[in-house]
Length: 123
Image (spheres, one colour):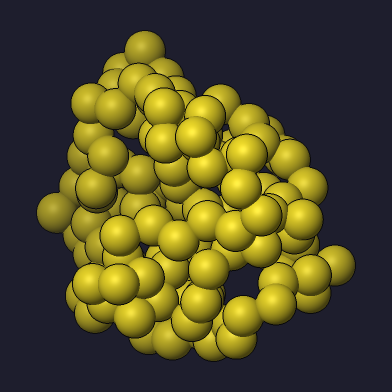
């Protein structure tokens, strides 16, 4: 079983969870849905979601997805929090179609710590 993660706002999930599939705006705009591995997710959250307090992680079994999943290089390296260093996080999972919600095995709150930084999730 391979677990991948998708960040979603609580209010968006409140509506999406009642449908059989979820297609965020990135699917139409970029042609795929962004996912991360558990190791990649804190870097993604700290880069793109600083200050967000309403995030959830969709925990997905990748083998249960019905759309094509490809691992592809990130467009850019990620900064290491509180450092001038950059890190290559390897290839990211991209889904080329909507998320079939029966692949979601868990939904967990994902909030930053008291310092405002996101830590690795407790799965």
